[in-house]
Amino acid sequence: MKKIVLLLLALGAASLSMAAGDSFVNEKAHNNIRSTDSLRRGAKTYMNYCMGCHSMDYQRYNRVAKDLGLTEDEMMASLVLTDAKYTDKMEIVMTPEQSKTWFGIAVPDLTVIAKARGVDWLFSYLVNFYQDEKQANGWNNLTLPNASMPHVLWEMQGIQKAHFETETDAEGNEHTVFKNFEQVTEGSMSQEEYRNTVRDLVNFLDYSSEPAKLIRMAYAPWVLLFVSLFTFLAYMLKVNYFRDVH
Ligand code: HEC
Image 1 (tube, helix red, strand yellow):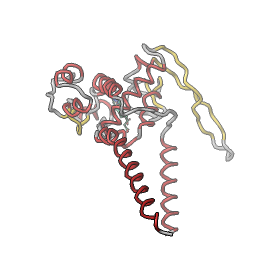
Image 2 (image 1 turned 90 degrees about the vertical axis):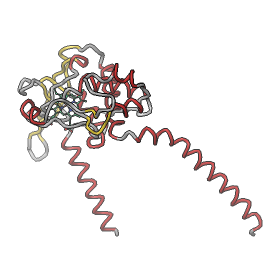
Image 3 (image 1 turned 135 degrees about the horizontal axis):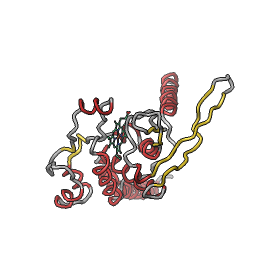
Image 4 (image 1 turned 120 degrees about the vertical axis):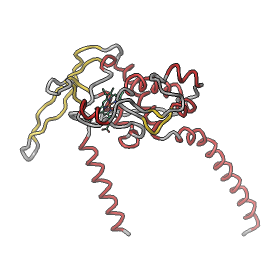
């Protein structure tokens, strides 16, 4: 038994250190899935800036409308920007073949990306784009180095450059470490506004990866209330029964 526990711990530690080594996650999302306003804003940014390339094949427009408290008309007017129907899946027109030709990679579907990557990873990814002349599309990303996705929100965030330093470790090996970002062009938003926009977007991706979470979160306070009431009653009953036990 002890060996199994130790093995599990070792596996856990190994996967954690691999995850940490692979990607640079330096900011937390702090998103709130219970905020419908935030989810609506996030959905809007998604439809406007991401749906051009990323499908959400396991999500339907009418489901999103229902969960976000929108009527069919509101949904069609503000969030369905293609000629898709209300009951359609959130698919894109680009085929995987076209995607491979244009980006060298099949652009991933984002329905469950928040489950795969985690919200903090997504947040960091969307704030960590920087200008890099060495890349074919002019952009690079600290969280997903050499990503083939351009910085599609650059007009909001502005353009930043990354500064790196070379450090030598105890064994004499040289490592390139990230030092800081330098803002070279201002965006249409302040850094705080941009982070709030990204937070809403990540919130929408978080919801989309598990729509049932909304229902769970809504029930949670009632379940807790029931459990506390029941505990109280059980306790009173115990006090009553044990009154005569000496
Ligand atoms: C012009 C097309 C395009 C647009 C628009 C676009 N992306 Fe991407 N995205 C890509 C490509 C290509 C990749 C694959 C990057 C790679 O792995 O090199 C990618 C990768 C990603 C990934 C990483 C997936 C993973 O786990 O590897 C996330 C997350 C993502 N995009 C989110 C977004 C969001 C959010 C938006 C909207 C703000 C967006 N993308 C808009 C093309 C696009």
